[in-house]
Length: 120
Image (cartoon, rainbow, N blue to C red; front, side, top):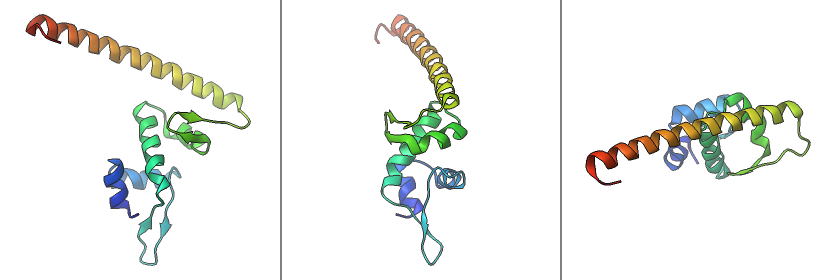
């Protein structure tokens, strides 16, 4: 599929897809006219990348774990590297803190809305 279709299917701007490709997160074949031709599997890969980026995982770590991603919630390292495990634990802890902050703010907003409008 061409980059425009991949962008439409994933919600990722074409500029972002080019960035992913430049950093080796996704790959495409090139047609004789120079257009990118992405395989179907790249749709799920882009969704995984976006989810990790949205969670705050740096591109450097995504690039290292990408070959080990099986599905959206599955990471498998055949031979775990202690440094990578430490980085992943740090990312997990950071995400936990971020999630707790988001939930506290959501609850505060919900309480405020309930007080001023009588609804949730």
